[in-house]
Length: 442
Ligand SMILES: [Fe+2]
Ligand SMILES: [Zn+2]
Image 1: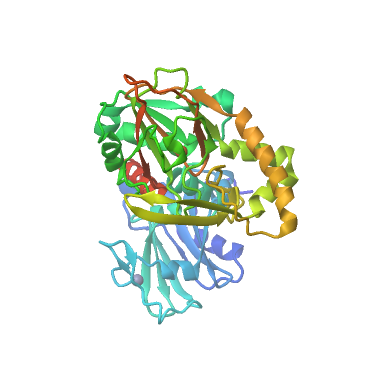
Image 2: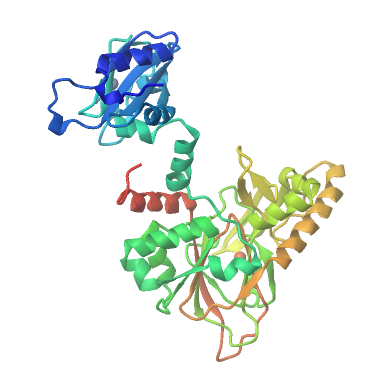
């Protein structure tokens, strides 16, 4: 074991240490600049070398640390495929700065490109690679660290920048997870805007209170993020009891738990429901369930039924006329949709909007009904019930949560009046990243 500090070893020897660790090695270069004055010397030393012909290893060492500490630091050495580095050259010829877009000519791109030389610049905190295609690329160390392929770095990027990780909740958690914001704060203050959108992303629900009792409030809120997602029912829609209603939601009956528009391939992501007039009758309360939590329960308690709900494709539909235009929407999709990594991608559930067409093999129908009834029962037991007051805006994730409403009675003096609109996650996550980037870089 070394007993002397690494900072007393000449840089060229450190480079050789790198040589010994890699097999076979073509090129190696040490980072420390002997000409730099001690006052501006950085304590971190950088080294870069080639491993197995196809990878580049970038290491940092602390000049003041002992050998053991530096062994730990070396455990965090970054490893990059050469082809990836060449593909991501940041020079103006390969990368268009103002549009932040790759412009490298892929018609001529050599995926077997080799490193001919590497040097590390400790003062600039960068490494420079000379490639077999006669090109030279310089990479900033911080930029490299943000793109490190190790599992911890990737997970940090995915959960802190790509999309916050959802926290699943049950009925008894509802009050704790439902954050409440003031309308004026969300409209005027970026920090509140970010916190609201983060709450929506993590818990799938948040309430904004003290908004004006005006019809354009949902639009003002959506415009603060991006824009309204238009559907068959328009941009803003009024949820009010109407005779001869074209949609089940426009009745004053109990509205069973459901997701909106399961019959769309691109289902609107987030519901904004602005309470302008609340029913003074006993009913008119909202019900909400985290269907990701219900899916967790299905998975652990009834794994076979869970599998059936993730695999059986259900026909969802909506038929009607809106503004004189007839429509017939159909989308076929399971109740619990999983993504490529096995995470929940989307929940579909709506008793009224489930088609009588069920385009699956005959012998899968009865097992599906058995599984679906368990899902519906579990969802019912996990439904939180609450009543919004005028000025409240209930916002929730329509991809994840089920919502419903208890029956109510209108009178001549009291007609329940809710204005709704949708937003899409693409637009919300984009806004969230812009807000975060103002504080941190990714
Ligand atoms: Fe709904
Ligand atoms: Zn380049």
